[in-house]
Image (cartoon, rainbow, N blue to C red; front, top):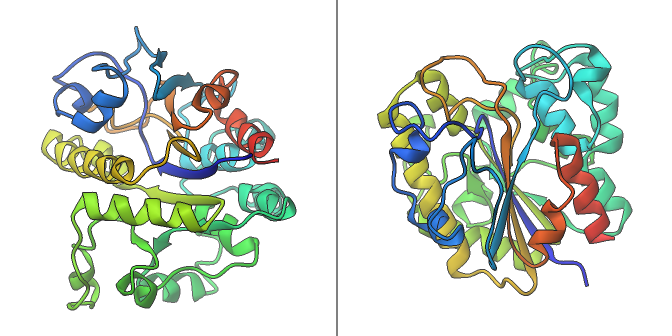
Length: 305
């Protein structure tokens, strides 16, 4: 029987050096993550970790193409299993290259799960400003890969109403930014409450995706304080997920598209590998043969089929 899968996509998180000065993963205490991994945090000299509960392996994000990995091509590779940088001959971002749009429409994980008769769910909610943005003809080409994958599969995005009713999750996890967007009554969650909400979605759907991009923003800001806040909320989210998690029937996947946050000595992306964390049902099966970004979706599809 295939597991119900929760995938947490973290924008801009690589595996870096064991350096508390520049790598916030060794400056910030992440209790939930450390418990899963037997007290370890992956770094470049120890990037493969396996415990009874979880596995971590490094994924190559460069995909044999020179230059620094970018979100448009990296996320396309991750969510389609197709070597997008090689197709366009370069790393490109933050939005997908024009020639990648048909690939996303035809080969995204949402589309492929639908063909298997599975029920996917993109958990993120968006404010009215985003709907106005993507509705502008001048902005239609500037849609992120996750959003494009969902829309091109025939689905609609979650809005503020869905979020207020507990039927979606904010991209910032807690909803605390929504009052500044014109939603003063939006209830604020703790990261742990948000995690439990995500696990609830997993009980309802076969595959749930949540996208978190504040990791990349903190990396570009080169701010250890901002990184600590982001990782603290992320660890709280993980704790909430695991508090309601059934490791016999559920699989949690956490991964990224390129490095950034793990090295605050630079404002740019890095060529570091990205982590693939799997927790719960058949976690070793998912990670055992994964070596780069293109291997994640095929492994998920094989497991779900």
